[in-house]
Amino acid sequence: MISYIKSILKLKYEIGTFHDPTPSNVKQNIFEDFDIMYEKFDSEKAKIASNQYKELVGYLFPLGSPYIWEDSNSTHCVYIDDSGLLTFNMGLINTGTIDDELRSCIRMFYDYGLAHDDCEMRVDLKDLTWSKTIELLQYVSSTQMRAGLLIFHTIPARVKRIIIHEPNMVGISPLIRAALSVASNKIRSRVVFC
Image: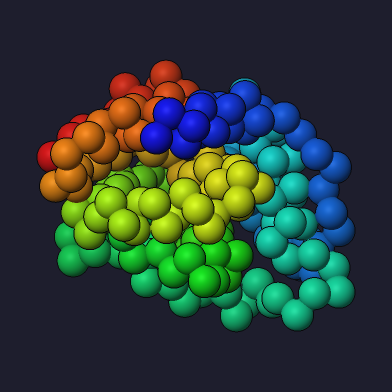
């Protein structure tokens, strides 16, 4: 487990690095809309977020690939729950289709940002088990983990609160703490555990 925690902590430093964006098959208006949405709530970080978003979209929707932005909106792990909260359920990630899950997540976060200036998010870990956690850590590459973190890092809405529903698993706290350490101090201050 220590090696997994070290891998997660290493991502904290990689999240701030930039790579030249790969040209994507996504229409330019998606980037323009993102910039407008992000600028509304954090003008200081808007340029950095814009570059990260272009890199992320280029990775998930590279030019010449069969992946289409408009078709990427179906996932079980991100949804709007009955109370209207944008919800990410880590226990429902399909490890066999991680990149498809990532494409759907970025698209759903984008659509959410179009409809909402503010965001209250639920990270639902109740369905997470040790076998699922080990499966995720074995099958999700560091590039995919970084992409997932960038999706959360570039959500185009002001995050007011993040409600984390903890799993019923003994010994998971170090992994949760390691994952939270990747977030900014501002985001960590908005986390509420249930």
